Amino acid sequence: MLDAWRPDPLDGETDVEVVRVFNAFRTADPNGTRLGKLMRRTLDQLYDGQRTGRYSWEQLHKTERTHYGTLFEINMRREFDDVIDEPEERQKLDYRVAGIDVDCKFSQRMNGWMIPPEAIGHVLVVGYVSDRDSEFAFGVVRAAPGHCNVGNNRDAKVTLNRAGRDAVRWIERPGDLPPNVLLQCDEQTLRDIFQPRSGQRRVNELLRRVTGQRIGRNTIATVAQQDDFMKRVRANGGARTALRDQGYVILGGDYARHREVAASLGGPIPQPGEVVSLRVVPAEAGATFAVSIDGVYWRTARDSEVCVDPAPEVGFK
Image 1 (spheres, rainbow, N blue to C red):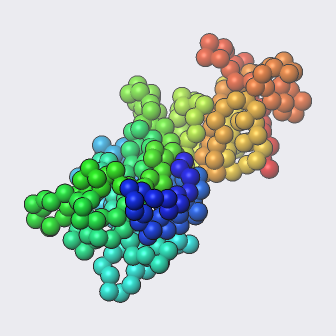
Image 2 (tube, helix red, strand yellow; image 1 turned 90 degrees about the vertical axis):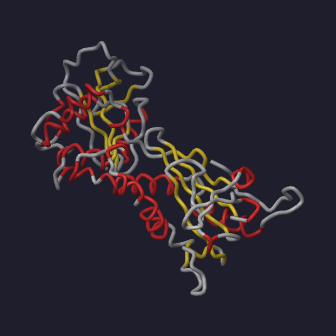
């Protein structure tokens, strides 16, 4: 995360409007959490995994990839409605931020933003995301003539030259993109997860094979491909029941007690809308990364350990 940027001299000159836009977003999202969720949500909208089973950029059609920029612009307006206003009628730009007309640009590759003639001279907010690398970037720059390449694009669009790229004030780079665990799985694991015909069995396999990682709602929807996909995680017939006898505890980020247990076990802490699956075994009192549940201590099982005891039931509160 980058700190708030103050108008210090830069080569003898500071673009105060760029500073104001930068600080408006930094104040609204000090640690980049909102931007990360925005990027994740926009990717997931394109994948539409619940209906299609898709989970990667490579699975999208070319026309769908180009649509990300439009979705990004729309979702930015919705997420940051406390920062973004409508631009003045005379302007053909996307937003008004801190009283300044701003254009929004997204590129599938870093520094590849295409800038239309009407945005030349104006402040831009620019974004990039890589689901494969679990990172994103978001910054502010002025599309000054000296910052732009002279091109022969038929739409008269230009890109940032080296001076323009160096002038970007990064609010997040690299930002922490909420994980897409399916992209981290090897081919055999993916085949094992998606092979069952039953959505419940696919979710069971996901939570059996992908342990110690934050798993988001959209991943579960993509695997289940059912309307009631989160029901496949719960107890009373869901994965919590099916996997308990095999030593798996499934912790949900919507519950304080579950987050406490995840932290005590030394695992990743699920955020709201996420779960973490951990395989556990009984432990001695006072053991490192052990947690007491109903008077019994538990720790995360090693890969070589066989779980003979059912996992504990963690309360919801």
